[in-house]
Image 1: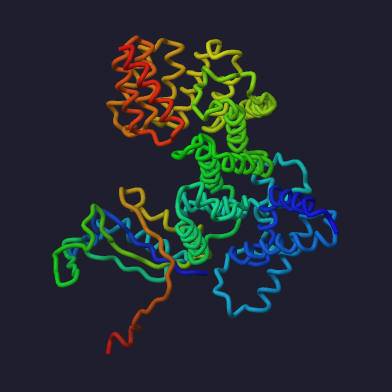
Image 2 (image 1 turned 180 degrees about the vertical axis):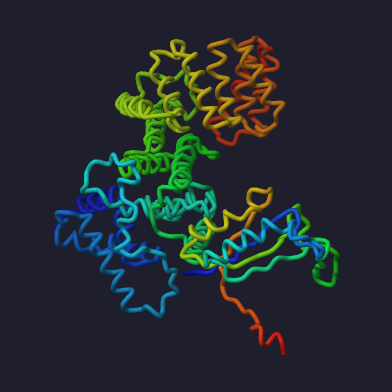
Amino acid sequence: MTDVAAVEAAIADAHRSDWAAMLAATVRVARDLDLAEECVQEAYASAMKTWVSGGVPGNPAAWLTTTAKRRAIDAIRHDKAVRSRLPLLVEPEEALDEVTMDELTDGDAGDPGEALPDERLRLIFTCCHPALAQEAQVALTLRLVCGVPAPDIARAFLVSEPTMAARMTRAKKKISTARIPYRVPRPAELPDRLAAVLAVTHLLFTTGHTAPSGASLVRAELVDQAMHLARMLAKLMPGEAEVRGLHALLLVTDARRATRSDAEGRLVRLKDQDRSRWDRAALAEAHDMIVGCLRGGPPGRYLLQAAIASLYAEAPSYDQTDWPQIVALYDKLLEVWPSPVVELNRAVPLAMAAGPQTALAEIEKLERDGRLSGYQYLPAIKADLLSRLGRAGEAAAAYRQAFALAANEAERAFLAEQIADHAFSA
Amino acid sequence: MAQYAILIYARDSAHAPDATPEDTESCDRHSDELVESGSMVMAYALTPRDMATSIRGDILTDGPFVDSKEVVAGFYVIEAPDLDAALAIARTNPVVRDGGGVEIRPVHSSFVKREEQAAR
């Protein structure tokens, strides 16, 4: 008999690091997402029994994969006619070398042993196919790539379990019926398709990082899954600068996780955060990635965002931040990603580099433009600028606007405090 | 191979009853290309929105069923190995770059009366 705790630990470990690869390998045999999911789950269940009596195998992931694949083969053999199948368009093995890792990475993958695209990439690209609604892409990615149980996904996105189940069933049915192919996109399609994958990863992270509503500022599980996914993508597509850019962005942002709220769960602003508690190892890892990528060619959206976040984090103190350089990076970011949210965020370093009056003028321009009406961070940033200009009454009014739009409780508490402070001093 | 229906959404159909070959030139050229490539299965160009009549319950109205900026100007069915291939073909429709767009729907089943039956 093996210690139950040791078996549980081995299973949790295999789940964390090998779920996606196992499922992807099983999909190839099952040719059906539902069946593959079932078989992988059963493999974990039987591991619990078998390993307690027979010991944890030398290579738990290989044991689990073989077990899952065998179950898939058995299921297909035994009740072909009974199951309502959702057949998946899996390319035959012979076609596998059609898109090689070398093509994916502009020929710098190096290791000929990794010439075949990883099965996990097919799974990821299928889950994030732009013909699926983004909320379905997110749900499928969490379930099939990250192995998060469906009820947990429902909770994370604040919908009921049946709603989440229906969303996933509909998406799987569309993959099958519309024949969304189970493959890594051709090089010509790759930029668009990769953008969808990165957007899902980023959305997972931001949803976890600032939960749009609810009590806790960080939904740690989603953040961890997003980090895991970003790391996996960076490993599978080493030649894609934007993949590394996103990975670096998540690392830098998450390095500040411990200091973003205080012991009572209240929001702490960047300038008030305890920099000594930031994860320096993660910041250094991100910094190296960013520098390496910036040398590689014209930077994309995620790499520039990472560079901005990294520059913020590298300053010894808030006041010593290199504001002009951050404004310059924002200008570059606006070139590749013209967005009113980016313009809004640019106002923050601009206020430090050129004074709050200049930044306020930009904010008022954005306000008149109207695209950000309903976006809580516009009145929040405006309020801060007004406060710095000594216009406390107007600042309180803007904080009130932001409060009315905010749903996250930590943020609401912070804004309520600001309203009280400024209304009192006005 | 699978069949996909492509619904063309435009301000209106170029195929008015008195349309000249010039009016329908870009549609016709695109259609010819798809026929030549072997992917076209069938195609129907519809007359403009003013020719449409709609029925909802007991109510009969003049005009398209859905009151919107765009109408279904026509539809065709293509054959493609998978959705990505179908999307690539659909994207080449000139309407996509002309303010309109296309909707791609997998075909479930179809029936077309054969010509000799129609003639009887």
